[in-house]
Image 1 (cartoon, rainbow, N blue to C red):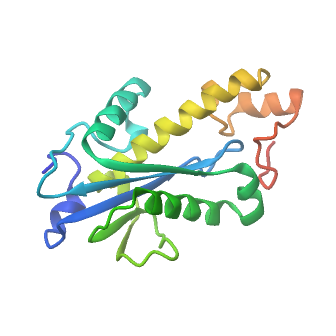
Image 2: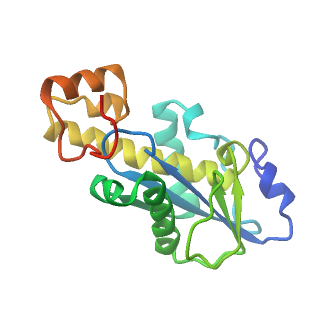
Length: 198
């Protein structure tokens, strides 16, 4: 078992496997919301000791660990577009992204560990909602890392298309720089119109 972030898994000894789910990009002004699901088999899988909440890792460290997670664990990544976010709201879009990731992984498990006070709709597997789950659960922290790396990579690529917006640096979040860019250059088609952009 992982020695650093296994508080929840350690207490769930009756479960042989679990999937951790997390989303990233919920608070951004532009770009999709991403979610990832990571499957962990307690009996047959080794653990990556460096795994922790993605926000506590440097960019280079996240990229390195994400690659290790993908080699060791079965995983899935899903996203929901800004257009859908505007249509159904960010909360529902975040749940939809997590549901899509779970369905995409196509793996049966004993329990799903969800970051935050949420229940993912239309999922029949038992779920455990965990506030600050990425600080408590190895599987959720692993999901947070690969979801963030995937979203950051996409937002960096958007900068090549939208040259007046520094998506590679602010990743669509509401920084002072980003808000200034919206004032000077306007919105792009990846901005969330339902959000207060400035």
